[in-house]
Length: 361
Image 1 (tube, helix red, strand yellow):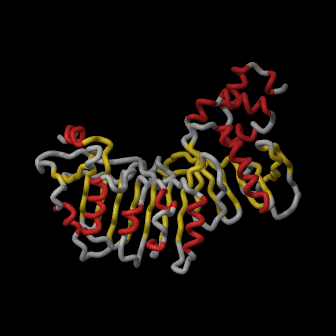
Image 2: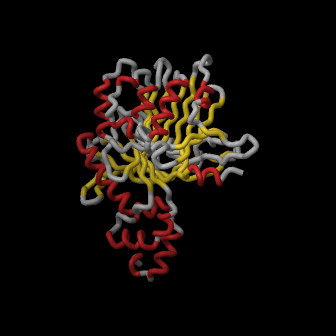
Image 3: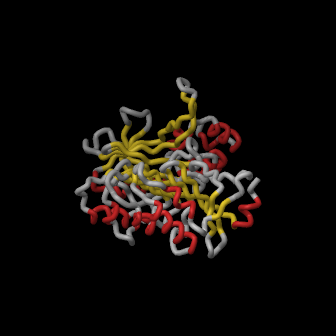
């Protein structure tokens, strides 16, 4: 008996007891089946927070991450329910069947690694295939899901797709051609997060799209200053590791923020210096820095951490509990300042100074 002949409640009961991966592949049976699955499983799909694309050499994986418990350590960990794989096809049409994917005929074969079909295509059609597959996935699961592309290198293939959050890690060789990097940044102007290890950041143009990423994590080993980054960054969150940074640079940064001249979108900044001779306590002595009574308890600043594609494991930035703050002149918003050893942390509140002080206990 055909599934379509069953009453809707029976169909829904069947779908409710199927794995999401199996529902996804069943949706290719017909437009009506796809429509039935989407309507009956709308609540389930709304509970999916994100779908990720990740790659290894010439193979890509599409999966739904979920939180689980590592029974050996009893700690939270992330696992992946892989719904499909994709690879560049090097063996012609052998064992391939074709499916209509968003109006495009895409070849599939049964993977040796996973018991699910694997999309395969020649390199020249890679971009077209990814676009069709992404359009199908986003139409199937809907716009309540966040779609992430996790790239371990900027040299790997990264398609330009709508509604896709890009997380990219970059180790840049000291002799890297800066124009190659600038071209990459310009090609993906709405990056979610960049983790970059490079000692020559001063070579990046102040107008580069690099500075517009929502979140950036930088590791430097030789660069003498972070002045250019602090002046040019236009994103929301940044962490700078193993950097040399003096209190004078931080004073200039805070003064620009206070006057409204820079860092208008900044929410969180953490700088971990590596110079044991640097005394950052000088930033607390500027005459426009304000202090909460030492006998009172300041509120805790903490935000959703944009640097990780796995917010279920590390949902928030490091908390800031500080008696020291400054106020932006243009809108009276507050930023808490914490200096601990050689670490400087700066967290911006959405509250005005009056609202902020009402949270002090």
